[in-house]
Every structure is written in structure tokens, then in C-alpha cells.
Image 1 (cartoon, rainbow over the protein chains, first blue to last red):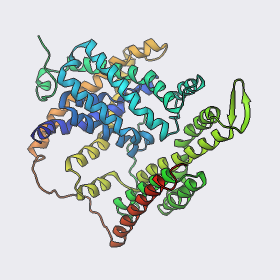
Image 2: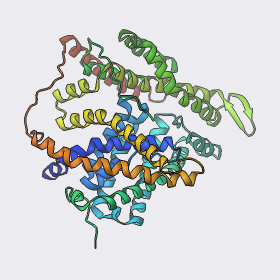
Image 3: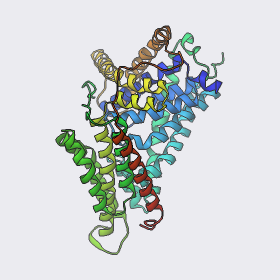
Image 4: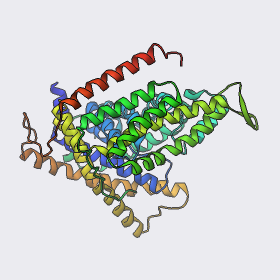
Length: 196
Length: 258
């Protein structure tokens, strides 16, 4: 309980809305310049890394709830649980200090992406009938045409799209952590400090 | 990019936010539990459409449902139709056959998504987020969570404008944001990092300002939002909860095989 209180200090509570706004603004920026990445969880992962797993989980959950609540992307709420786990994982990676080293950050992204793919697939398959109404449905169709069932096809699609996106996200988080002043980083206790 | 200010939904005056929320949850549960496309559509037509009409938002509601739903329907009709095995083949295309069973699955999922996404859409149209948060705080949701949601809704338009300004500024300095995919990916860092860094640097200032205004103080707060609830609505909410539980129970027992 004490730890939870320390995790949710005023800095964290103020950072979470900013992080969600970053998720939304950067996600839309990625759409605007047409890169094949979602980039809609940078804020979530930053909060997880800096403040801890619970704060990361809350940021992920609320971020998806707000996508739905505002009507920008109505289906998002169905994936709020996955977003929460992505945030919690970021907290765990923060404790190990991985996001401070570029290749470990990418590795963290790869693991996060695979976890996200496996967790999202049943939701996409059983709630949405296997489609998301976007370009990724072409990958689902291809996977089905070589004989995979609905769940298998969604896992295949996720494994294709998610690790790429999360590796890019963690790389950006690595760059941001390097650029942030020590004075700012010192306000948070989750991230293991850089060596040297 | 969505530059419009946040829409401020008009409140369906008579309904307490929790009543709207319960209604929408009931619709979602019923949509998921009912085993027939026609029954699922009946939930949409008998619950969501009349409510939207009551709130004078019917046209907007139907249009939004259509906009959100059609990409799903297209993909469902194609993918489920071609890849659901079944005896009644409607037509063939190369090595793939389109089955009636697949079309049936596609229509059932489409109807369920219509109810689920429609309920979420209607909730945002008839309930103001701040009123909903107030109602949840009155029922025990931590104040901090309400703070996060309401603040986010307020600052997002600023962030979208800032992202737009950074994009324009970097373009005017010659940053290539169009062309081959490698160019566009390389443009990400100079666009994303200024946005993130500048917004993070404001956090500390805001935290100090809030702490100076007793943000962390324990105990109840006064709210600008006041809600009216009635006995009738409270009773209706309990009935809907029971109805929803009953639907789940029937789904898990009687309709198990469907």
C-alpha cells in the first residue's frame, strides 16, 4: 500500500494525462505522415518505465477508455486490458534499467509486442470476428487463406504488426530518456539509474 | 489530424450518468449473449435507437454508427464468408468458396458490433464525461482517476495543435515528411521528440502548482457538477443489472451450444 502511494505521487498523477495526450497526438501524427506503425503507446510506456507498473497499467487502461469515450476510436475499450498489461510490463522493464540501453530497449519492445499480439488475438477473434476494419485485415485474410483458423490468423497478424510497433516505441522512449535532464528523472523512483 | 475542439455532448437531461452507463452495459451484454442476428438487431432497434431519438441525436447517432461500422462489415463479409467452412457454397472464386454459413457468421458479428460500438457511441453522445466521472466518484472511484480523465480531455486539443505546429515548423526547415517509407520513418524522431520533451518539462511546474493548492489533501471535495438522481432510476438500474446477469446465465446454460 505504501509502495502504491509512492508510485502515485503528484508527479505521476500529473504525468498520466500528459502521457495519454502524447499517445493520442503521436498516434495521429503517425497516421498523418503515413508510417505503418501505431505509435499510440509511447506515453503509456514512459509512465510505466518512470513511475512503475501500476501507474503504467492505469495509463494504458484509461488511454483506451478515453479513445472510446471521445469517439476517436470506438473499439479501443475492448483492448484496454491489453494496454494495461503493456503499461505494467513497462514498469517491470524500467526496474531492470533496460530502457537505458538501446538494444535492451529494443528487446523490451520485442517482448512487449509478442505479449500484446498473443493477448489481443483472442479479443480480435472472439469479439470482432477476426477483423479490425483496417489495412491489417489483409494480413488476416492471407493467414486464413493458407489454412489458419480465426484465432491463429489473428495471432499471425499481431505477431507481424505489434513487435515492430513496440520496438519503434521503445526506441523512441530510449531517446527521450537520454534527452531528459537528470533533475526530471530524479523525481521518479522506478527506473534504475543509468550507469556511468 | 483532429483539430476540432472536444465535442461537449448535451446531457440527456433526465438521465443520471449511471443510468445511461447501465443501459449501455445492458445493451452490450445482451448483444453478446443473444444467439441470433435478428435478436441482436432487435436490441439495437428497441433500445439504442429510441434512446438516441429521445435525446434528439438520432440522425447523428445513425450516421456515426454507419461510419464506425462499415469497415468492419466489409472485412467480415469477405473474410468470414470465404474462410468459414460449410456445406452451402454460394459461389467460388479461384480455390476459395464463399459459404452461406460464413455470411451468417459475418452478419451475426456485424450485428453484435453494431450494438457494442453503437452503445459506446450513444453513451458519449448523451453523457458528459465530467458528469460521468462525478457520478463514479460519488460511488467510490478515487478522485485522482476522475482528475486524470477530465484533465486529459481538456489538454488533448492543445497537444494536437502543438503536434501540428511542430510538423509545420519542421517542414518549413526542410524536413521531408513525404516520399518513400524510409524518409517518412526518419522524419518521426524530429517530429515526436520535441512534442514529448516539451510536454514532459511542463509536468513539474504543474505538480508544484497543484500541491500548493492542496491537491493531495485527504477527504471529500466540493464539485461544480451536481447530479440529480431519482428513486425510479435507481430501481431501474438494479433491474437492468439483474437482467444483464440473467442474460449471461442463460447464455452459459441454455444457449451454450449456439
